[in-house]
Amino acid sequence: MTFARDLDFSGKTVLVTGAANGFGAATSKLLFEHGARLVLADREEESLNRIARELNATAHVYEQSDPASIQRLASAVGEIDILINNAGILVAKPLLETSIEDIQQLINVDFVGAAVMMKLIGAGMVKRQRGVVLSIGSQTAFCGGENRAIYAAAKAAISQLTRSLAVEWGSSGVRVVCLAPGRALTRMTMTSTALPGSTLDRGLSRVPLGRWGTPEEIAKMIVFLVSDAASYVTGETVIADGGYVLG
Ligand SMILES: NC(=O)c1ccc[n+]([C@@H]2O[C@H](COP(=O)([O-])OP(=O)(O)OC[C@H]3O[C@@H](n4cnc5c(N)ncnc54)[C@H](O)[C@@H]3O)[C@@H](O)[C@H]2O)c1
Image (tube, rainbow, N blue to C red; front, side, top):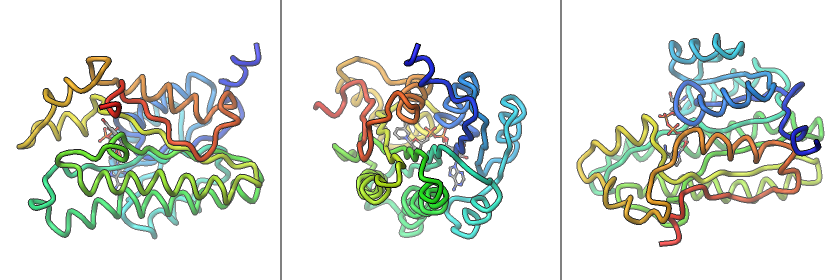
């Protein structure tokens, strides 16, 4: 069966950033089940090592807000066939209550670090004339959101970067895609919903499917998009949000 073969990652090396929790952990587990060799990266050493042992993976501790740390990671990992550019943070506050340091940190992790990662890992793919880069965007890139001003802007920038790199790298056979999840229940959202101004219940009434997503549902979309089953998709941001952005 060709479709089943397309979802077989045997012989492929996948770098997953932010692999210690949430979407990154769920995606790593699914890729492992589908035969991938995994290189996992995160700043949280203990939980990273735990999942790396479970999935027979190589683990690298790094800091996404520090380009020199990303450079060390890129030099250490060797040839990567697929990058899941997933590590990210959320500062869930109205802009007027967000410090300048928080703004800079959010942009440094969610945009600058993600862009540096694409550049440094993508370089090898372009050279070898094959590879896939998938970054995690957000539904907020399309509809904005209360308490999400800088976060939504950083994620919109990731979608635009995806489009441009798809054009720059297309002739090298490298696909560049973005997955924009709606709210799914991970540590990131469980924590932010506890903050003042939480919109969890109000937000849910806007989801046509009537529920929040799960990390496993997001992982399945990620694995599909980086697989050969999606071989004619590039530059696209695919939204998986239960219909939230429809209004
Ligand atoms: N959960 C959601 O509803 C949701 C929705 C849309 C987009 N996203 C995006 O999905 C991605 C994963 O989020 P999640 O919900 O799984 O969050 P999470 O907090 O469960 O996991 C994020 C992982 O990234 C790592 N990380 C964070 N900052 C880092 C840094 N500076 N350097 C290295 N590693 C770092 C964390 O240690 C953690 O393991 C993020 O980019 C997030 O913005 C999440």
